[in-house]
Length: 498
Image (tube, rainbow, N blue to C red; front, side, top):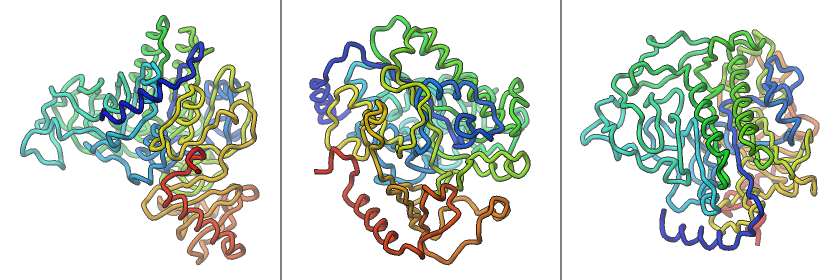
């Protein structure tokens, strides 16, 4: 950590209003999970999600919550920094990619470390590391093989370099290296190349696994059970600890490959994907039970959300099973339509949120950092969490809304801006994935018009069927100007307004 950032952390920590008990924080982060997959968000869902439904009954369920992006790495970065990803990058971290964090960038776990928390991340990372530090001289940077790396060396610039005291998991379930990484070292050195023929058959879609080094005997079906087991162990280990903890548990599911374990087959009426969501819900139940058993539940902030909408297989699933994972929204992963980034979000905070509340206010995962900072009395510096809004008054029921504007982006030139009920797609359309004409016809969408932008009133048209750009050119102009202003000024957090 650079000296200046260390000094800022210490100065901020010195201003903390010391509460009697700082809350533990458990963030459960789904991967490619649809807004319409959970029963508590969609009564028509064909997937049982009893544990998440129970969590929603105990906390606050948000109907208008968003990730920063329609893809993985950017949304995770935004959640952990309180900053829109598009200010720094747009795409995902590819296999053996570098860290997306600059050394001076304050992260949520770094902030909590300064406040005396122990911090851990378990599961999917997908935010990069310095793989070149263990790459052997002369080895290729594409088509990596097991012999191209010195696996005995620590891998720098991963979770431990950005605020986590402990980490366990893999990079991405379908990216190399196919092995477990604990803290900054692999538990077992990859010794062969990934070969899907050695695995049990895929249950839906395709493996989508990129070629690269793998540990002999690697079984992707064990990813969710093993990370869940580690998460349960970590929570139980905190039973007698007086220090508060952060656990950021990043699920590998229901991201492709869609591989529910056999005991979950047929648990849903939405095919293997539905069964994988059910298994994910089962994992949530195990982690929440461990929290109850530890005696920490009454003093733990639990946040459940997801990085983006469901994968393209949702179109076929809708046609064959009648389950639309993004219901009632248009769009999937990679899209700037609502289904790409409006995600199921639940917050349970004993003593702050009331049980069973449904909140319709516009919120973002980017807001978690400022919210937690406010609750702990932490003074965020001007160069941190530049887009994060403090949701604490909203969680307490003191106000009806905190933010009115949000910018959605997945690819470099495809933005959408939300302001109140209005949403402008500042591109020819909001698709990042291919358009599915059969799905549009089945759900009553008109053929695409010739407008260069799309304008929707989400209060009356949540499914984004009626482009109003031609009817309201003044609104289009206003939203374009607002988008330009927020992008150029470098921040959107209210505390930085003056």
